[in-house]
Length: 166
Image (cartoon, rainbow, N blue to C red; front, side):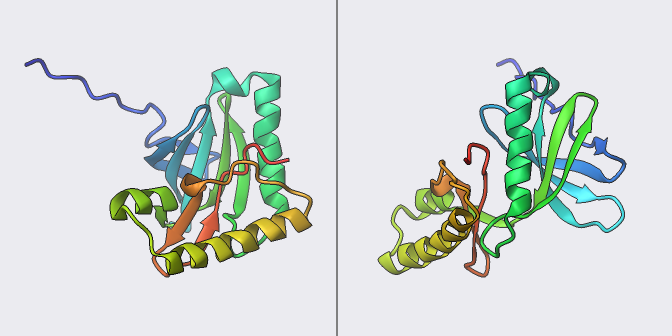
């Protein structure tokens, strides 16, 4: 049996903006990769969403990514992942955000198979607080689903991925 080569992400270990280091891939969507990053001076853990140059050079895609940063920048709520920075370097665009350690709601559902009604209500109420706050700021998420809801170790909820918000 032949060994299958392991694909290595060329951005792993890279420093961006002279401030952050990309440490680990957390997830990948249709257009961007999300990394766990580290602030070089404070050692703070952050989430960094990277848009590759081939997409960052496309005007509409770049504008949508920047709009996501603007949207997040307007939202300061305990149940919404916070924006720290937007960087552009070597053709890449990077959104630097709060790292919300925990599991996505869909990971919990997959692991548990079933979630208690009490947990669903608690998670739903916290999610609704975030969405109500966003709506009060004239932001509609438009992609709310279990994979965009993080449940932290203290059972608090963080809503993420405002990439297609209006």
